[in-house]
Length: 310
Length: 286
Image 1 (tube, chains in turn purple, green):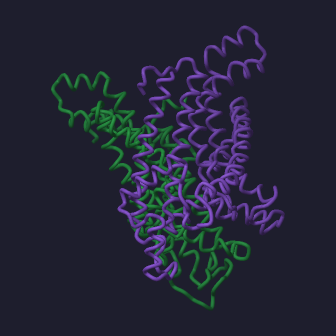
Image 2 (spheres, each protein chain N blue to C red):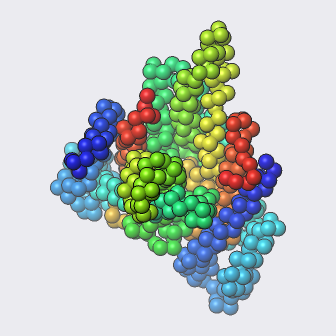
Image 3 (cartoon, rainbow over the protein chains, first blue to last red):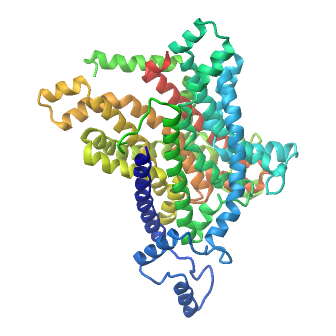
């Protein structure tokens, strides 16, 4: 088991290296630089000085090596778009905002999604079931920025009960949290429903009923425990995206979170910030996948990873 | 293909099962309607999408302009109708690119196994830890905006799912009896892949592609929303949403109509995908 974890971590490091090389080459292939004339009129000497200060006068492979070496020591450089702080400081300032909204959204998504999924499976083909199906189809297919704008039009323009956006106090959280919650909630409800339906048909559930257990005990002890396992694979990959903030949702609601930097960093040719964001998300995704696989072993004794083979 | 009764009745059965699913049939009809709107946009729309009429700017829906007009008096219905073209082209063409990259890679990985499989899967690993949107935005910033580049950006990030799917199918089919029989009769790899493995993996591939269309449409809308997608004055729904988002308080219809269309087209394709999955894989639908 330990060997398997180590093996996966080594693999993750390799993947991160390749991904960072690709990102580094791509972002330098983007025409223009961070200190071009149209952004700030500088004399050639001053520009050369700035370039030297940030190491941008060196050949690309040297720049890459230096960045990765510093990153290994948790020094991610200085963001060109906000030179008064470090990249690490900028992320530390903005990420908690995104994580808070995303976290609240996920919490609502899981609790409501599970509840709806179980209800609609137990009461299959009743109005609860149909309502859940409609809601989960809409939640999965309607894009987040469409939902955001619909909410703004209804609650901020027509009824004027909520602010159109901004950051400050629970009133500004409501709409973004709803937007974050709807998609994952739909996915959770849908998978819970089909998984519970499948488990309800299993032989051990029939046995449990046959030996006279109450329906409630059958549901909570036998059905739920087994039908929640497949959910792990669905839920895991959703976490990194929601927790780092959607640039659409944050842009529309004017939330000062991490999401906007996925766009502004590229527009500003903010190389250190682009690399940091890529590494951050890639590490989050890699770790989430690993944890999901490990949890699978913990909750399902039938699954085993042996000898580092995948 | 009528001389192959087994095969044609498989597809006929699937079509019958698909039409029995009311929701998917309605969705398919809606998609068909949008396709007609896209093809016949010049004949259906009362004005050209870039025809500006400053006297009629900022109008709300009326008989003359069914969806109102925008800031320089362009008929909004015409712009919405032409926008259908972009979304449909992106939806299908991006999936075609994913298909052209994902199927060969998945086929090689699943059929050859060993070193080829290892290499392809490591590439898939790399692609799956990438923040997709960041990657797509980087590609757009590198290549510049425009329809072709949008297709490249979406296709380059979108093939991973198809590749995984084809590999998994081939891995399990490779060991089946009819493939062994073909091997023992001296069939070469190309024959086995093209005549035996691909046809048997076809329905999951079709379903996977159909399910991917809404994602591609959403990606284009997103890129255009950020100003990195389709160049004005060619109308794209995502671009129209972002243009009119600042005025949503006063001219809410200008943001709402394209949002509604994006939601509708994604919903339509998703429902068609659901229907296809149930129709092509009857075991799922007991």
